[in-house]
Length: 374
Image 1 (cartoon, rainbow, N blue to C red):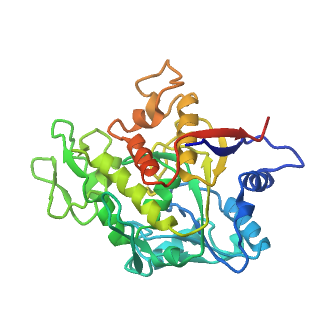
Image 2: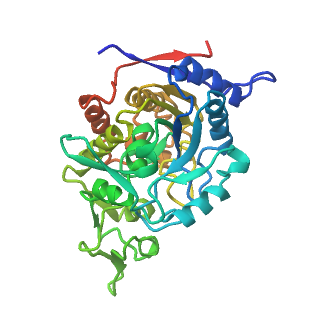
Image 3: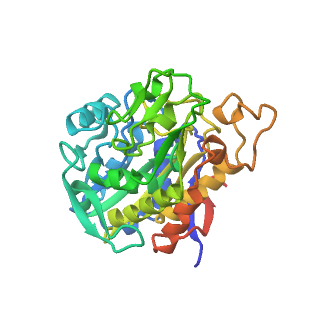
C-alpha cells in the first residue's frame, strides 16, 4: 500500500502566525477541503477532559475548527460519549457541566455541545460491521447520525492501550456506555498482594464497588462486579493492581479499531493529533502527571491509522523529560528511540491495535511525513 501523507507543524510562531493560524494552514494542506461541508451535520469528536485534569486540549483549538467548518457552510457540534467509570462525565448532565467548566461551551467555541449517547449512555445505534471480533458496534447516536466526523485528539499515554490518539478517541470515545463495557470486558485486573499497602486509593476510585480493602489490609477484587475499566491499575502507586492480559491487551486494541471502523463507516472524516502535554495517563483522570516528552507539534491526516503511527514514532524519537514517570529508573538516559508508552505501561501492546486497524481497511501504518515548517 502506498504511504499516506501525514502533515505536521511544530509550535514555533511569530507575530503574524499564531498557533490557531498554523492549525488552519495545517488542515488545509492535509486535505480537509476535499470534504463537502455545506449544510452537513459535522461531529467534532473531542475529549472534554475530566475536571481537575489540565492536560486536555484547549477549547481555542476547537473554536478554530468550528469557525472553519462554519465558513464552509457546515453545521458543527462538539461531542463525546459518556464514560463507563464513575466520575464527572458518566451522565449527560454532569458531562455537560464538566465540558462547560473546561471551556467547551458556546460562548468559547461558538457551537453546541451534544453528548453523543444521551442522558444515561443508552442512546446509541447498533451498527453492523461483521468484523473479526465485533459483529456490531454500539455507537453514540449523535455520532452515528452525523454526516461528517472530525476527530481532535490529545495524543498522550494511556494505561490500557499504551497511548490514546485518533483511534482511541474515535473507537472508545464514540462507543455508548454499553459499547464501552463490551470494549473493556476482556481485561481482568489482579492484585499483587506483596505490593499492596492497603492505602485504599483503589477503593476510593473504584467503579461498581468491585474492589475493597479487607481486614488483612490488602485490596481484593470481586470479579462478579469487575468490568475491567482499569481505574485500579491507573491509580495504584505501588504496582499492586495490574492487568492479567491473557491476550486482552491485543483484544482491546482490536475492538477499538473495529469500533473506529463503525464510527467512521460511510462518513467523510478527518483527523488531527495534538502532541502537547503528553501525560503518561488518560485525560479521564481528575489529575494529570508531568509530561513524558516535550511538546512536539500538531499533525493531521485523512488516515487515522497513519496519523497515530506517525505520532507514536515521533514520541519514540523524542527525548524523555527528566523527572517524568518514565525517567524514575532511567535518570541518566534521554531514552531517545525508546518506546515511551511501553516504558510508562509495560503491559500495553499498542502496535496490535494499529496492525488490526490496517488489516480491516481503516488505514495504513505506512506513512510519509510532510513537514510544513521546512
